[in-house]
Image 1 (cartoon, helix red, strand yellow):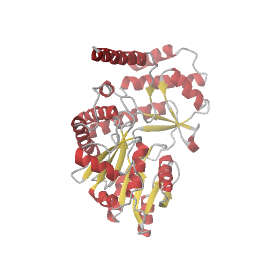
Image 2: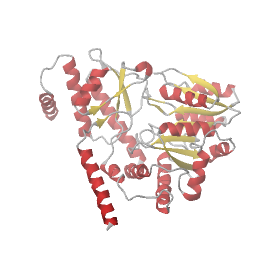
Image 3: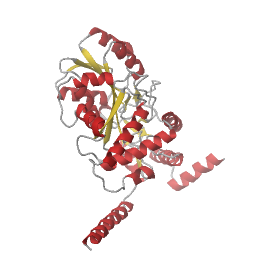
Image 4: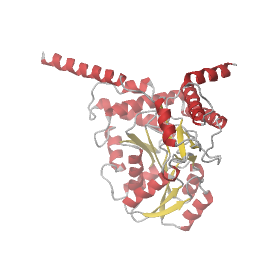
Length: 406
């Protein structure tokens, strides 16, 4: 009788939670993570309670590691480990586990996340060679090669693929070839590029590549994963640990021996990630790349039609984030709050770009209808701010729809 009472109470708790969720306001997320997720990914969060030391969880981890390797385009010379934590946990695990104590790390910087790598390396008292190209600028490949060639003490090179703070894609293929030629370990932050941009750890000579669940993979925040080559493992295994929780060797030991994690994982997030990766592979990795290219080009075309200006026009812009100058006739805080009142979350820029530029991410589950509604709403808000339109948003939307149909 007690068991029945417990089960009934638990079910009532689930129902109350779901009802409570339905009473909250929902927003369309246009920030660069966490992103909009599909019903399948959300549904994966509801599952039978599972012990993370049971063989059923091992089956989940095993299959997830195999599938993630396909997304990275790794081969038999690569191992994927999964960490409960944000993308930054993967960054710290990568830098602190890989860089030898008696060698240098070259950090390539052209935005906020490049600066974060320097911060992480400094926390661990590393010998850093910083190659800073400044925000809004692309990476000079020849300058990188010159720096590597000039200093044989540089053992590792760290850079972002997609520097999310500025929306610039960095030349990982070219830098990877240089690192391969000079026998340096190449570490890449693909947190906001994996799934959205062309990336192949084999073809690009990436030794350690990290990413996270809640961006172009379309899963839930709280899980990071790292794809590591055998060549990098040889270096990692010879390093004295700087970390406990984020020691990559510890994750590999548990993954290879029992297909588990060394510490209690975010079990439900693993289920959601598994569902999201299944959806990605059903589309195919190349298919997801194509979706992002088409989606981003469509959004940028509409922004141009609104008379908006971009932070950069280098030809190396990402397909997941667009960085836009805040028009002079509106403050970002007003734009943000007004768009939120209509159900859309846009994103402010960091540091020197704050209040001058804003970001629109097209990551996540964003059907064309949702994108069109956002674009029409943004048009309305901007026109209202310029006092060029006095009607309602409903009238404005009807006029837009009529114009499109004609």
